[in-house]
Amino acid sequence: MVSNNEEWTYTMRRKMQEIVPGVYLGPYSSAMRTMFQVLKEHGITHIICVREKIEAHFIRPNFPNDFRYLVLDIADNLTQSIIPYIIMAKDFIEESLLSGGKTLVHGNAGISRSAALVLGYIMQKYGLSLRRAFQVVQQKRFCINPNEGFMAQLSEFEPIYKAQLINQHGQTSAEICHRNKRPLDCVDDR
Image (cartoon, rainbow, N blue to C red):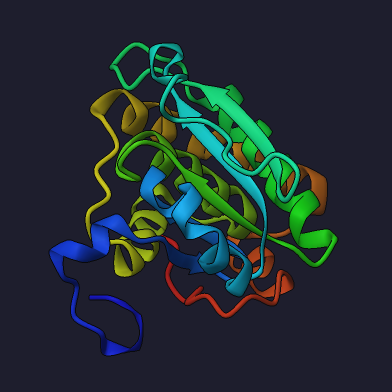
């Protein structure tokens, strides 16, 4: 189900969706030159462009003078390590939010690599399980489908970042979620 009881349609795959306040997920088509005004209307200030090196000639920053970019060369395959990129994406998104900005995370289709980054961000930010983070993201962008390698890494990363959060803040997942004061359903992180 999509926010505001809007029914998910196939054409929505070509648009970006706001997953949590200030964080959007979408395909490259949502960051193309023809979408400049839409990006500005949504308040986007930062863009994470996810691509493979071989895609660099057609998936690229289109507005380097208007938005701050983080370009990540990530292959969409089962052996690609995603965790270091999740940490970079989290830092970039946090920088954006702290400055009052909003971030669009896009890959080619907004389904696997970019979705994995947003899942990792939400898991860490709100102290959620992979299962719960997946539900949150899929409620807004139904078509997400990170590859099995990314999902396995996210699952293995879960106890590590949760232990780090508890060590840093001495708080449980529910307390971390409520501390962030974001309108996110935090009642069940299992």
